[in-house]
Image 1: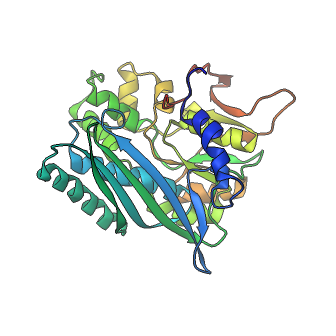
Image 2: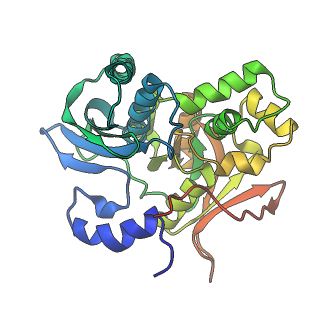
Length: 324
């Protein structure tokens, strides 16, 4: 049968289960949308983290909990929804000390207070395998107004909410692969890896001005590629317009490939598209204009491209994929 990744498994095995239900959105999006009260839709997302895959087994559990919450919040916020509450599943390795579980809960408490949500329920079990934690996050959006990755049009501008590459560099720092950088820069990117930024302040601007939106988890180029394919467009990203931090520029100066920052993943920024007028409003709200949506020419395939100084860059791997 050959190797499969998460996207082929979803397409081939799980999409038929979703059928034509409006709530599932054909499993094209990262959320389900359920009619709630007359004024709101309920926006639902689930993501899991596995020790040794999504975080290091020695990572402090309070930080693991906070990252789990933020990874899930990221999808909700990217749809223009306000966080509402969450359910939690924990599968603890047998023998996990009570104090470690308490550290995990302490992290949850810090961020649920920060983001104004609370626990609705869930399950806790034991396992012979590694620690697995999963969260289902609920958000609320005005009825019929939940954003989707569908909706982009040729001529739209492509925008991003913040620095790209911080999470990737944090991972490399934890792996001991960043040399020649200051302690301050290393600490900054490690913090970004553990605690991705969640932009609640951009929700209203997204609702008012974006045509399509999604969060960036697999890498800027990979997720722009998902957006482009969903809308049957070409998305052309300008390397020179993608925002990067001073620490990222220090990493580039020390030998890290700029392309690696755009394909590395763990950014959890918001990627969106808007027409020219709305793009200006999004920029005023804090977004960065990084590219354009282009209609398909004859025999052109949809997808995302990385350009620099008028030429397209050859990128072998656009981003992260879970082999399954």
